[in-house]
Length: 213
Image (cartoon, rainbow, N blue to C red):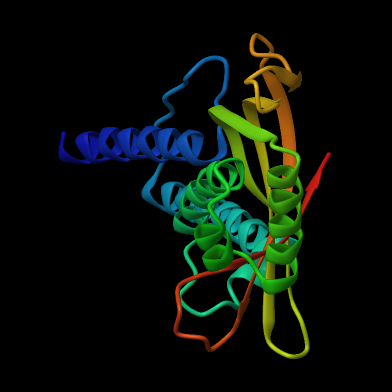
């Protein structure tokens, strides 16, 4: 009777291991079958399944770590991908608002000198023409890291793609809309490049370029 119970126990273990295999690999037979096996046969099956699990987990981990972008990102000290994307989205909103509101101080703080000069020049030209800008960021639908690289001089560059819904207007000194539509929501895809010198203790990544897709 004891031997029979041992065989039942082994059969149940086989079922448990098969269920675990299904959880990791996402495979399962159409019909679940319980087969009573000897201890020796069970050990052989168990080892085979265990090896399969370990190989699958290794392949999955290798795939994540060896993707071109992630391979670069893991070389950046103390870098956290989720945190970076969250902060990049915040900066995206801050800079859109600052540019529309002629807030040069915020623009200067978060952008590289050459890009800041371009923004400041556009702001000055609009002021001379008595043109005001209004930007309403409805929502950011997507914010993803599209590319990353580290130069030979230790400068890290990360390109972030933003897909957002916006309403953008330009108005004259009378408050009349001269560009854009108050009732039209644009779906805009931007790619912004952020840079930071490795070893710089500052947590700030400066925006160095913007382009639309």
